[in-house]
Every structure is written in structure tokens, then in C-alpha cells.
Image 1: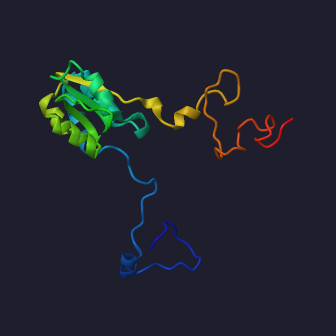
Image 2 (image 1 turned 90 degrees about the vertical axis):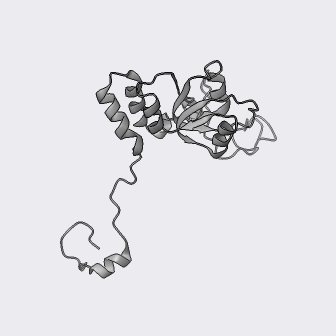
Image 3 (image 1 turned 135 degrees about the vertical axis):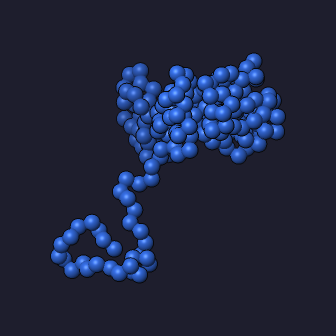
Length: 196
């Protein structure tokens, strides 16, 4: 198996039989997170139509996972109230919400649906569409409602901002443990380490 440089050092070349048993070199950089299927059709639509909708979809398909936030079924129902005749479009994942009991029959396009979310939508008489299907039904984005999930609801975002402990900061501290002795008024109370 070749490691990409020529030179001495005792490392000889391997035979094809040995290479087959050892495995295949992985290309540095890891797995590409670029979406595969939807890009071709939306690249074509952006090039051939003047629709801003298609340009926005293509841009969002290229976004990182952090910027493709999931949307819960309850939020989806809330946003689509009174717009049941339109197609909801989300470049991200639709997740289930057990608190929702009444789901209208809505058509939804998303990159992914959680198993229960898909089952709930279809049971209510709705439809779960892919972006390829949407491109055929609404090539210019007619009768669609473009949605986005809450990007700043991630746990990591709660730690951002002014340092925890400074005045008016609402940032969450990175705490090693949530025990009695850890960042719980130590030095001010007998039960928290010691009291001054």
C-alpha cells in the first residue's frame, strides 16, 4: 500500500493481492457533505429561469448542517395555518412533536422527515415531497411557503456571548459537573465547599 512518497526507509511496494486484503486509501478531507441529488435540477432551474425562489433553494442546499436547522411539526402547523392549499418548503429536517394532536392535511417538501413526523403528516392526509418532486410541481416556486427552522436554538448557542459571570450576561457557563460543589456559590455557603 503506497503512502504517497518515494524514498528509502525499508518500506517496499506491496503486491495487488496484499493491497486487496489491506483495504483502500481514503482521500484526505473525509466525506463530502454536499447534497447530491437535488443540486443538478436546481442548478438547471436557476440557470434557465429568473425565479428568486430557485436561487434561494440552491443557496440553502449548499449550507452547512448548522445553517439547515430542523423544524418541529408544531411550528410547521402554526406557520401553515390558513395556508393549507400551499406547499411548505424547508431546506432541512421536519421533526415530530408529540404535543400536536390536530394536524391539517398539508403538503410539505423537506430534505428529511423523521419517521414519526412523516407518519403523522401522511395519516392526516398530507403529503411529504422531495425537492425533485417540488421542482416538477412548482418549477418557479408557485404556491409555496418557504420556511426556516430556528437556527439559534442549538445547545451550543446558549454558551455564546459575553462571558458568564460578567454583568448582564446570559451566557451559559461550561460546567464540568452540576454537583453541589461546582459553580454553586462556593465560599459563600457552608454546604458549598466553605463559607467566608
